[in-house]
Image (tube, rainbow, N blue to C red; front, top):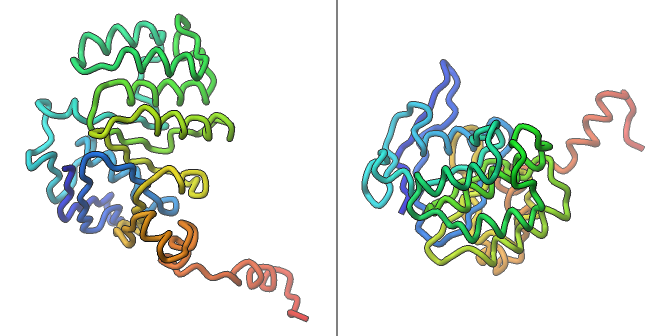
Length: 245
């Protein structure tokens, strides 16, 4: 169980996370949603201890330290791989440092994305770099795989196919926490949706609950955010000075 209790993060006078309480058991596929600046990336960085925060974050009741952090992996759009190393060199490095490294999965995903095996990562396109980042996170052998906007630069067909592949390769003990703006694309892939707004966790629902209520994920987000359907009409009216007919 990955658990956050009253997690608070401030950047100067700005509150990025405001008392977040959250439990994520193993075996879930969870979507993390929210507008820009809602705190999604900050939350993930706090889990890894990349930035200081107030509150507690534990893994099976224990603080996250070098002893258990290999149970977590991170695919970030900021990239964490070694740009001068090839995928093959990354494979060798990960094999040496992560005892549960999934070599078969790594090779299969490289083939799936058709990535060059022996070229340095710095020569890759943005989409290819993000693909390598995701492959490494999925192959590390972690129980909890956190992904922060991992599909930037990838076309819709690559993304759709990848969701199907991911569902097919995940084992029962593997958990994915996926931060993305692509709500419609991941709606049928995730089992649970979390919604952040201004640093607060304002929504937590399973997709089964939404289905039973006859709602889509977008319906849930709009209702929780109190989205105003007429905001575009009103903005155009204010900008043009025209009255509605």
